[in-house]
Amino acid sequence: MKLTNKTIFITGGSRGIGLEIALAAAREGANIVIAARSNKPQPKLPGTIHTAAKAIESAGGKCLPLVMDVRDETRVAECATEAAAHFGGIDILVNNASAIYLAGSLDVPAKRFDLMQQVNMRGTFMASQACLPYLLKSENPHILTLSPPINLDPKWFIRHTAYTISKYSMSMCVFGLAAEFGPQGVGVNALWPKTVIDTAALAMLKGMVDPKNCRLPKIVADAAVAIFKRDAKRCSGNFFIDEEVLREEGVSDFSGYAVRAGEFLMPDLFLSEVR
Image (spheres, rainbow, N blue to C red):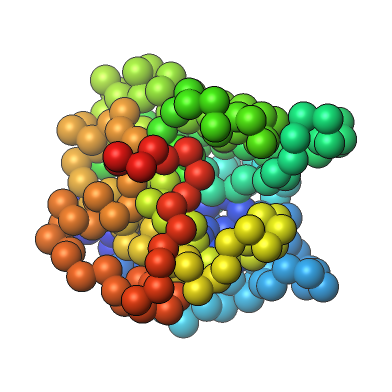
């Protein structure tokens, strides 16, 4: 499968992993829809939908930047319609938008709890719902959600129950949508990094992880592109790990993905040591 002229709708893709996926797909000739809130520069976060669009076009793709809050179901539906009208359809949805707040249950304000549930679980469901009518018309449709395999080890709840619930809710959407739409030819899968990735979200870890112990977002992007190229009819209901995907593609040297080669790599949340 090739990505030339395929249209990829990415939620929250103005920076970090979402943008890196957009750039990797653009180099393959894909059309990219960046649907995110970042219409204007923010003092604490890099990039906007407009800077992302320029980078994507420089990488060889076409880009439609759309201002969208994934919590607003009306706007989500409007953006899906605009994207399909602009590019002639939607072939791939990447549920990348996510909110994080790592704190114990007594220290999570209701506002933060609601934000995580609305962006992570509800946003994933609503974006999928809005794009599915177009995906069902695509030759090789995929939904890829950046969420982890569900691991019920208590250690993934004890420090941040609220966040864990929100990410596992995204994963449950993958389970459900794969069961419902996999038989109709839509490949619905999850992707999660084996190690912590060096993005702006590291600030939310409150210094727990040094960037030198991380990998670059490119490893997740390369794994995502590999998944997009697979036959959706035969690739659904999987909880992929980035390194494992790339090993299946023949990659054996991962040193180039490290922020600093040779340093210890911090395993990401929700993964057991044996995986």
